[in-house]
Amino acid sequence: MSTVPASPAFDESALVVRARAGDTAAFSELVEHYDRRVFRMAKQITQNDDDAEDVLQETFLKAYTHLSDFQGNSKFSTWLVRIAVNESLMRLRKRKTSKTVSMDEDVQTEEGSIPRDFAEWRPNPEQLYGQSELADILRKTIQGLPPGFRTVFTLRDIENLSTEETAEALGLSVPAVKSRLLRARLQLRERLSRYFRQKKEA
Amino acid sequence: MTCTDFLSKLTDYFDGQIPADLLVEVEEHLCGCHHCEVVLDTTRQTIAIYRDRDIYEFSPGMRERLHTAIMAKCTPKV
Image 1: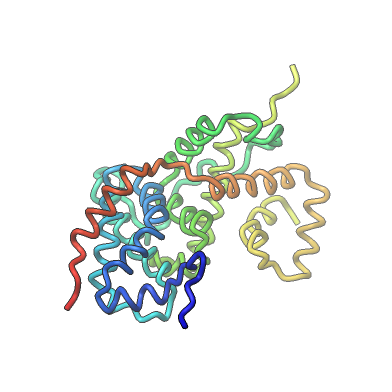
Image 2: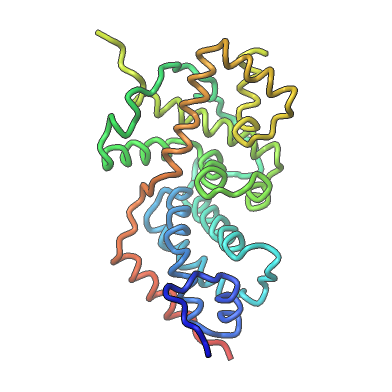
């Protein structure tokens, strides 16, 4: 007798096996599971709605076409993230005409990497701003970050990739990822502090 | 340990990758340096605030449209 689970758990590897065998319904479930994550990451890196939509579509189409190449040595999600990163960077490069966006060159700017604002964030940002206002501040702030920093921050801190996975996805060395991550975090902190810093008593 | 030394260890500190003997020095510095304590706390908040929320709209309508477009191009393999 077969048992039907009350709420079927998401079984990534089983879905990948089925999708690889040509089961489009299984692939559709994978899309459903990861589309939000891919979109968010693409938007974060490209900072452009049209690009993020294109990246989302292209990422899943490439994944579908190359499913047979996916060996299962890494997680499907890691593989998918890598495709999405490449697609995002490609679009970012296409859009940038004057400023070069290079992942293999060191990002020169030091601006904001040395902390200058030492005010505490009190009350905390959630108490200070409403949800939509807060989201607005966060969008504006990350948009101002150099793309090379933004990408590392996105993969490491938002998507939770390891330093090694981030390095591999971006074709960077581990020390380069670490150095960019530090500067990205410090620059974001410095910029957010303008909004969140404790107000001095009058 | 100077503030610059501390900053250079910040990422390893978050990742829990600082060797025990050095960790003592880091903690000692933090106890005596309010600025670095604030930088540590606000950097931690910076990471958390981005990690914990979706700041980009991904509406059900857009999601469905994209999903349909993707699946239309995924033809069953023979």
